[in-house]
Image (tube, rainbow, N blue to C red; front, side, top):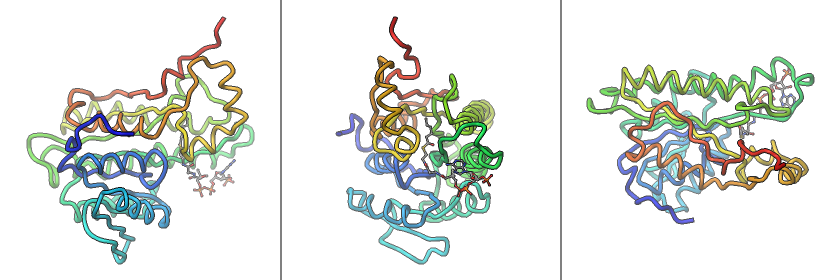
Length: 285
Ligand code: HXC
């Protein structure tokens, strides 16, 4: 679908997107690139990151590059780059940020899209399984923000003295109420929201960094949807949820563009729910 935004709204900006190689993260990477940003994608799986960089190339983001940790595999130059890395590892966060900075000269936007999940009942979930999702979503988000601060803050590496960067956290709505078989994801996303609000307060005040969240509803064609909403759950939900309909990855990317661009310059510390109103829905009586 065509974007309603001008193609230059992120011109000259550099974005680092964790989990940017697939699903919602990849669509954000693509749309940021199409709207003028240089895009660094960070992901755990080399092949996924590699093919994402190649896809960006074929989608008209002309100059893509894939860099493994030793920077030895180059497709072309500039504009988009893929970096292998796990947000659970502080050294990976540091290395990927440093590499993106070396390549693009600055980092203006951090999108925390990396997430882990699986459906499991609380009694079948081991504490380590609980911790694993918290580690990816919550600790991973904090780690990326923490390591990105020197680049994002007003007057920081590559930044001007007149303004700081932007952080977008991809969160969820399931912790607003409660969700079956997702106690670990719900706890993790609640923590992500808390991290976002606290950084919005502290880093907004001290460093001119805006921090916001986007809470997607069920989005078609994503790993999250296929893992977390098998068809039988889907059709049951449709029966009693009046507002039920699937969103598109594009919907989330447009929200991200809005928040990351100048259009969102006064928005800080909030979460934009992009779910068609689904989380509010109740059976009709
Ligand atoms: C029960 C499980 C499990 C499962 C893993 N574990 N999968 N327990 N059911 N299906 C437990 C393991 O037994 C282990 O605990 C612990 O979790 C760690 O498992 P590992 O396999 O060692 O972890 P790892 O290899 O790091 O894999 C992490 C992962 C993985 C979360 C399990 O599936 C993953 O990273 N997936 C992310 C990809 C993805 O789906 N992305 C889309 C995000 S969409 P023990 O005790 O045995 O050691 C999204 C939307 C959220 O996030 C919002 C929706 C509304």
